[in-house]
Image (cartoon, rainbow, N blue to C red; front, side):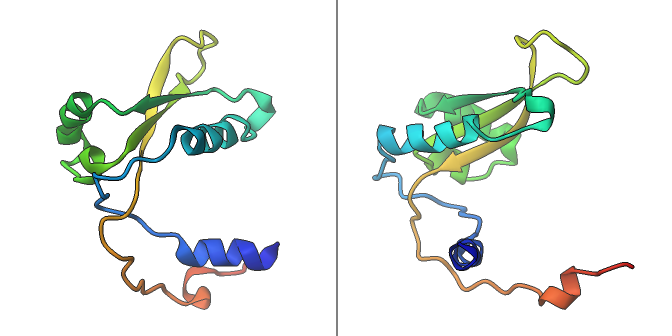
Length: 125
């Protein structure tokens, strides 16, 4: 399991452009969203909601407020993660926490240069 996790972390990267001719199958998106829905949170509140946007016109309207990033409009599915407003119990009130574009890479993954472990981790006794 540790080996699989490290392989996944080595592959982790940000994709800036997706292949607009390929769409993620609904079954795959439902699997990903179900994993997110079942993710634990403090006190079991799971105070989040997922908006899945596939409408091209709506993605185009969102792109300017997302620093004009091309992945916002080239992705297959744009998932907006909303979280409950702080200190509010009314779950109909949410704030945007993060936008996550999903899709298939348009270009091969580039080689990443990561800083060595000892440069990013410090143990304090």
